[in-house]
Length: 309
Ligand code: UDP
Ligand code: MG
Image (cartoon, rainbow, N blue to C red; front, side, top):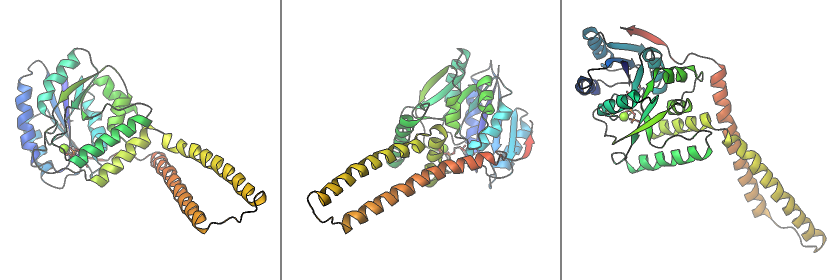
């Protein structure tokens, strides 16, 4: 049985030695499987690539795919999958040891039992900040309320995919790749392994809140068109209200002869509905932007060099 560890790396020179050591220790406890590493260097600007090259030179089971610049984790994972899907299974791990390598034996065990997808489910986010926990929870709740296919809550990218599951993910042609959603979309027999997510061991996160917000938008627009449709219903509701209100105004004027007052109410109504219109345009724009990205048909990433592949 051949299993590839797929690890995206963006400026992880501090984490890499720790990651290597820990995974090596864990892999020694699994002698009946043959392990390989597929490291994707996502345009690191520090010593990550040099370190990876050194590792690859000493260890023929270390494959390195170096991208021409930073394309983002999603693209890096896709680049790595293409290489890693040659093995019987692929395990996706973060380099910072937040997805503990000690999960590997549990994943492999489930794989042997016949599961195609095994994902790590965070038992607690105690190590995350309050804001991160709150926003993550909000995202999953909202996403699952509107999405065609709900995401399992608190499942990261950390997971095992059988070869056919990995190939299925690679068949999805979209350029805007919300990997969690894609992994989830393909289906197959799926198991969850609970784990406690550690704090990042070294270096720092590359995801600030702005990036996370955009990531969340990507996830939402990728898995649901409900935000688009919502405005139709809202429009109907507003029109119905306007019709009733118009009748009321007419009756006031014609039957009772009351003067129709209202700078304040007019101003509020105009501003409110201008705002609503701009928001709905923005939502359409969001989707249009995605469509634009798709029709450009650009490659997801550019490979600079490959070692041991
Ligand atoms: N990563 C990447 N490209 C990027 C950002 C991140 O390949 O543009 C990798 C990073 O090296 C790490 C993983 O994705 O292995 C997770 O990143 P990070 O720990 O910064 O995210 P967090 O755990 O905070 O969500
Ligand atoms: Mg991390």
